[in-house]
View 1 (cartoon, rainbow over the protein chains, first blue to last red):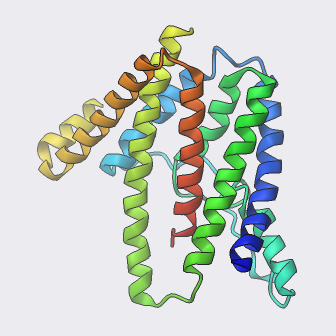
View 2: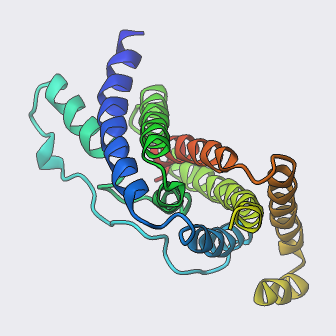
Length: 180
Length: 61
């Protein structure tokens, strides 16, 4: 239980802080009426591409990975903190799923500081916590067979991500037409 | 969509996935319509996306 709690705090706390700040900045931009249109285009394009496996433009994001030198030889506590700060928010490193790019778009469409702060904090907490739970639950060395399993699992996640994006496209279409 | 539809016609294995994408889009339209287009639904959806994304990223090779 302590292992879970330490990882969750190390990942979720920096993630909540970063996304709350991002939520504040993006919701203050005058994009309320505008940001839902790119949201619809983004979700429709990547939703379809990921669900049916089309070769599409790579999902926006960075290709950077945490270098081993950042954590090699460091005490366990500092290692956990480094992983948590860099991986918890999800912004610094590579992410193969297009769903992640949707998050700032929706924050920009809120157009309300209070909502931006609340949704930003919730996004950060959800992302950091889920990542920490998955890592602690499945943290072990993997062999070749398990690597293939993880590739297969990643393909299934991509389809699920595409389906959620298609759902959000539908939500955003109605939201735009009712509250233009 | 046209390209996807064309591919789906030539590759029958894509049809169920295209149907699933259409169903997800329709579900989003219906749910949002039932919620009178409230932005809270969009906010709740992205929180789910964030959680799913964090969990899935930890499992990507």
